[in-house]
Length: 296
Image (cartoon, rainbow, N blue to C red; front, side, top):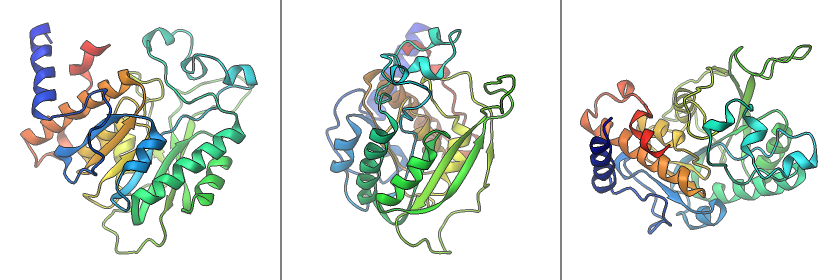
């Protein structure tokens, strides 16, 4: 894309979609349509406190795991990206991410606090889906119940055989989605039967070091009843929002790092523009990141 075309596209996204880009939110309303979806630049716990109660169909989120280091020094490393990305690929990630330096006990307190705040925002019968790795899965299943949710299960995400081969070890090829509900879930929910295991490789074309594939997130988003808003307190580079709107959900996310909040807001806005150009073809809209190359 030429520079002038990129500039025109950026202006159009920001003006037409009226997206808030890397600024503090001016409104904490829950979006009611896909077109109103947004990503706010804010601190997640304070942000959750200001969202209206009982207004979301569910929370789908990928919080910092605070794992990946065997020792205290690893967790305290000033660069969180280095714990999860190999040396050869680190040069592709110029912006680090926040909140990844807690030990397991502190992480448990923190994630329970977040989940308790999220419980207030979600409607009765709504759901929570939280990504996690094997190191924190026991802590998360305790925390989600302590926060008042009903634990419903664990869905493995099989990242296929391309992940972290180490001789003499089992391959570390899975992450997990712990899911729960706010109280009873009726059998008449407007949601499909979903797979108990998701198999999809990790994309190498990603802006955020821990960015999840849109195809995986689209599947996860379907557990939220059709058309109801999805909340993500850790929006990162915006892939959760892109997946949500492609599935017809209004979306509101929060990201504290301005670079990622900006990237995610523009990617989300571009996706909404594509949907609006042909609203009957949700399934066929590509979630490409190509128009965003100018931010990298």
